[in-house]
Image (cartoon, helix red, strand yellow):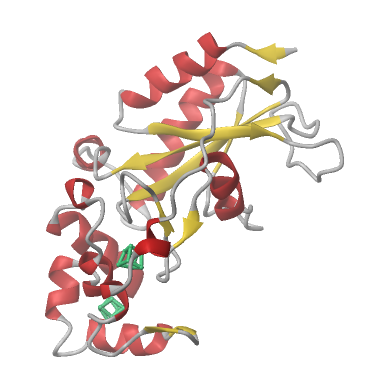
Length: 229
Ligand code: SF4
Ligand code: SF4
């Protein structure tokens, strides 16, 4: 059985109520080790769920303002709640990038939308730049008619100056990979205020997708979670 484009459209509509969007999808090949669908059989297809810019932020903030919300990992909890409800409504199994063992979300995302990593590791989107994210995925035991994937232009290939590699005060991104400890020390230290309040200077230096750039309070929230401030 193939799930109709109508169902895919209904899923997209349900997600939009919380500022989330479908980020493409694909069918697993017969020779792949696909994760389980809701009934336990290997999934035949997956739809990726995420965001462009900070669209979910007001929805998340309203949810967070209600009594009894968790202090730890609230965005993860909210994403699981919202995407889990959509999954139940369409017979899918919801999974999260924070599930253990980790699922290959980045590979799925590259496959679903034809994206490639930027020098910062974040996937570069031709419209959203570095200002997008994946919040979950829906696994189906049937094939789907996913939104058509187009070969995406990889803007980093045409970016000569690469300002995203020149703005960090401790040169945390280099050909040797990401200097996690150096970044953390700086963010937590006396000179880390710009990163703490406005987000990663390297990420903000990218000239693309600036209409989708997260507002400072959103970047500060993510930085606090990353650096456990
Ligand atoms: S600054 Fe250039 S190389 Fe860096 S992420 Fe943006 S487009 Fe890619
Ligand atoms: S958060 Fe700050 S210290 Fe860390 S990589 Fe970005 S600019 Fe550098």
